[in-house]
Image 1 (cartoon, rainbow, N blue to C red):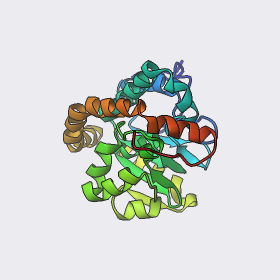
Image 2 (image 1 turned 120 degrees about the horizontal axis):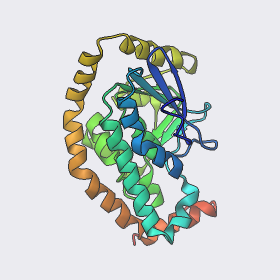
Image 3 (image 1 turned 60 degrees about the vertical axis):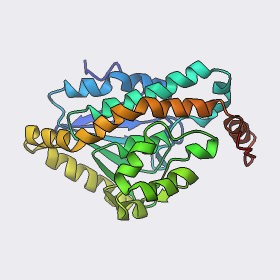
Length: 265
């Protein structure tokens, strides 16, 4: 029995020391409550798995890496604030678990990475995307604070000025442009994605594991400390935005397939 059999909401495959995690949920691989539950202990399990040297995370199909949280739940959560608060905390816990992962993790961005999906990818050590993929954090477009990690990782990667432009507008960026400004490692043509991702994964898996893992730890040390310092405050700001009239308007507008009419309340 594999150590990963108990995780029912994620797909796993392994070869030559490389473990691939696949997000598979509907057409856009939204991050579900079940995935949140799996991610609670997954990275600890991987740390204890001596056969795994490198991790690759990707989405099923070609359309999306992950569209983030399921926007269909927004109206439902308007009347369930405790569930919303729990979900926000779980998103933070998932990212903290990722930061505590001792082994290199590579995001194979096979399609659009949006919201929490983008944040999950950007917290990985290396990020390779198909050049046409869109990467964005549109929390503000649905009246939410970008409080699940995006407000931390975007400035770290591309600087505060550029990060503000994308986070305050919610506008996405095409992967080829994201690579040019340092948001991701590299953008490649779709038929080169696996060659690129698994080429570096195999190289790392056959390398000096302690040296590679400890170098990763050294690189991420400041980011991890910053995350610990701010994530509860960021989650709190996101939860506050959950109670605004603008968020309620955005949720109803999404279901009614119309543009939201924000009032600033």
